[in-house]
Image (cartoon, rainbow, N blue to C red; front, side):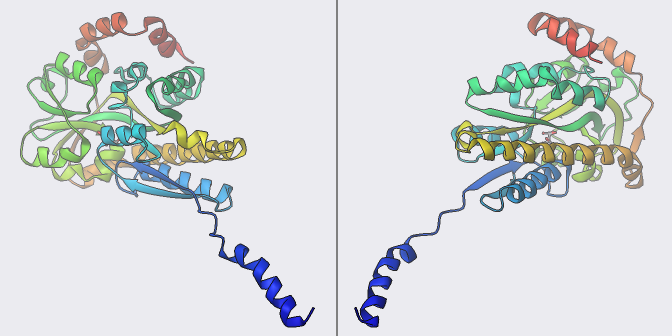
Length: 322
Ligand code: PAF
């Protein structure tokens, strides 16, 4: 066989290989509320960095901002995005068992909340997502929520009476604020700043990290460290996204999710430590001495209702968790 013929044959065999398209790099789209430089952005960025690194670049993770958390959950459910980091605000409308974690004054501090969520209690609630066409991956957080408003200093429960307050689309939170005599107005976070600017609502409640990161001091003069409820967040994915992964990649996915949890919690801790000083520097009046017992007492009828409508034994187990 001549050299030319040999080369021609080699080229003919090589051609199909050369023409074969490169294997597509699967993309995982993850949405989160708030700016990249926030506790939610920190979690999503850590997930992206860890999963892409651990899988040697076989996957690409695309992170996107969306301040409408209900919309993100719906998109995950129908599969137009793969995953979201969302507060539990609207999650109870999809997975009612989650509402137990939204009960005011349930957790003593961050260690208590993180401990419960990472324990079998939190894992059992994550397992309930499957029945609703969702995959609960891991608990992250927003931190403890505080009250801000443009009308007056809030020093005791009576000061809350009559305030029009934006709440998340969360039945438990709305019930609590109604009990305090406020007028809770549920809306997505994306609508909050215009609503505060136009006076549709007087105030809102969110953790320091959110108030700080979104410059809510520009539209709110007063803040009270009510610590009225711990605000968990959760990474939720479309079940098919997780099922498509091999067992080995699923383990790496979970490792990346733990990196996200760590980055997110570390940022919340840092914001909680430095935030009050910074918000005062920006001109907010911050009330730090709060009569927590008075707020708890004012909520007594709501607590009694949750004892009846939720799993009372589980509520007790969570409260007593050490
Ligand atoms: O207030 C909310 O809706 C949530 O706390 C936020 C800011 C979207 C973060 O999860």
